[in-house]
Image (cartoon, rainbow, N blue to C red; front, side, top):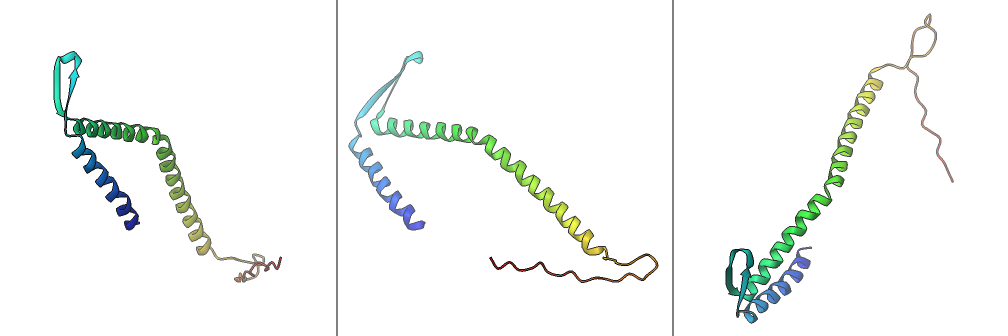
Length: 120
């Protein structure tokens, strides 16, 4: 996994550096309602736009996945609840002796036979 990360990161970094070096010319952006013009290198505007797009995409993905995360939390809580109930029932079963016979005869423990083996 680490090699794959480097195989992707190094070419992307090289492309970003080459893009920034080749687009050093100034570009002006007019922020209309404020009557303000910002003049920066072109690559700065491209990187800012990519960053804003990435951030908006991350926020939209986070909100879109919210119902799935909520269901996962509810199901995890239900699993914990069922595990606790299962452990409690198992402890109660292990603590209670298995008795046979009538009330007039003494109780004895009876062994439990294993289930038959299937040979299908």
